[in-house]
Length: 271
Image (cartoon, rainbow, N blue to C red; front, side, top):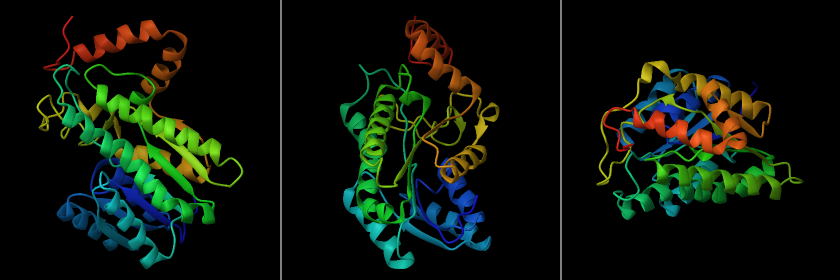
């Protein structure tokens, strides 16, 4: 993987998959622009990379705000001259039945997960086209299989994938590379910050994080996917099986997914 001198923008870069991606591209020679809402965590993460010899720019960014996304790209170009790779990773999850979930929270989640990708891609696109660069959307198996008690999350990931699939086809002759990465369940803090029915973070993950793929492993797959200019990557055996089976036996998969989610501690699902 040769990213020496490439300018890589990573959203949601203060923790989890985003931070792991920033480290992975950085150690492979890239100049890394890290974006996140929490400025303290962002600066601490950026300092870690700087101490490892990586050229870093930290830009406090709320991707749900188009003016923040515009400023992110503008500052990137001011400092590094262009954008070669955009990793749209920023996102939040949720865990509640649709009937109980606040519409304001649904809208908030769509703004971050979907429109954050749209905004950042829109402002970075002129530079990415010029560089024949890469746009990556960090999606989820939930973008292929609708997850119960995750309606807003699944909707946002389906929307992200539809947007990026259309963008890829639109740019078949421009040299732009568009990749959708679907990690499956990954050990990160996204479940800790997942919104509950009243819009507050659930605080504690309902899943055994230690048994999942690590964020570092996911970042390695994403970096390799960009290097090879892959169209899609679906990670974990469970994830690949779920995507395949959902196409062949959708009703069977719906029942199995319900059973799996129903077994989570304090699951909002009831038989």
